[in-house]
Image (cartoon, rainbow, N blue to C red; front, side, top):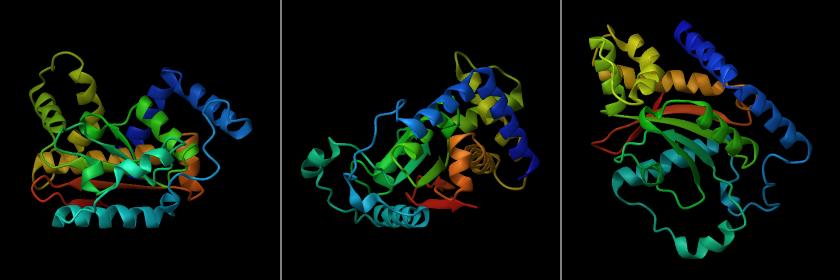
Length: 246
């Protein structure tokens, strides 16, 4: 792991400890391991059997769905007749952390139906306690095999963070919290060849993937045991194409 990823992971872990999240996560893990006290038990038979996939198969399905979306040949989803099955539970085949930007809709971008994606959205697709807890629920209870961090072209949150950091100006309201979360990616991108915004968007995805992979105790263990895959990608506004970030 690069020193930036390591710094971000240490900073993130410190934040979790400060807010008592690790204690909560540990309690959750214990509840899941014993009697399912913290979360409702999933149904014995998954409502969508086709969503029981390996991490690699889940990624392949996501990318094939995106290809259909790009080509404008999305499937016709029968939302009416799947409602009854989904009243009994859910087993999404992928979790997606994406930006709250109104132009980015993972369910459309990957041509999915109801119950297929567990989506967490926040400006700048940044990671925080609530996002980690949500993804832990998806992995531990819903058995979701894949997590994707989805950045996007021309991200306004990242652009605002770049301008704030370069100018030294403090943004109003709660926006400084986003600047703080995006600062490691922005600082890593400044001075690199190419477009500052594009570089920061990509770097933010890379660092967020690293933070998810090392988020203890649940997600890091699932990654170590190869129960889940964690990948990053960037959405192109003009074409709708999702490109994986190595």
